[in-house]
Image (cartoon, rainbow, N blue to C red):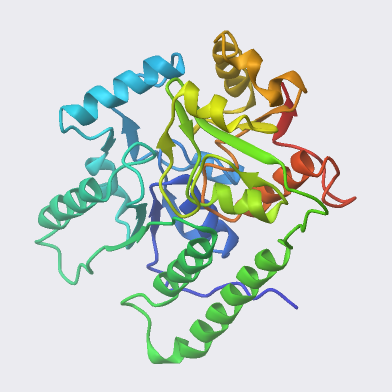
Length: 333
């Protein structure tokens, strides 16, 4: 099917404050309307030239334990983890801001975005015919929520206050195009039915302290033919102890720390490998520990969750998902 570029009002100006939303906007074909991004948005590469509208209030460099302590101290003090650059937003004059309400540690909070927009609208109160800024907040907890969020973003962007009746047909075309894009992504995932008992898989989302990946990750593991022995599908990621990990004794360990690339993941894994209980785990004894670029794949509930599933298939089934895919985003320990 021929892809139809979405048509939107010439006034459409989008600021995305979370990487997954930026990827959704790009996948739907609205990249040209992006005028601002978060400090973490880096895919597709074209967005890296956009103004950065957020910044962390903590030093993001350090060990996983040090970063955890800094973030915890901020949250304990009832402080936000990230700052919204309201002055920059005023210059960018967005019509839409896309953010999230899923995790205050992952990105700027919804409450901070609402406050920034309130301040922004007050400063623009004297301007004539200044339309309100539409906030689109995403809160994905499972794979189905990704498809819903993509359609929600498409619906918000193709129906702006400037849209007039002659554009209805174009809007309908854009809606159809979004549905086609979502359908194509869905069809790339075909559940793997294991021929025997599925291997126990532990997905580690943080290393110090230990955290078991939840939300969509256990679902992706099941679709790849494995059994997540620690995380709960559709539930927030949760802390676990070394006793929990040892009791589960996974056949396969997949390390995917939130916000870490492959090099950072390797370093964090080498640090926890010094723990005396690490060498007692079956996955470690059998050399079935895998490192992934969680920052680019598993941690982002955007279109590349499909690629994340493909990575899990390659790890669990020990075979490429197809001959066209290059095995990127993961490596053995």
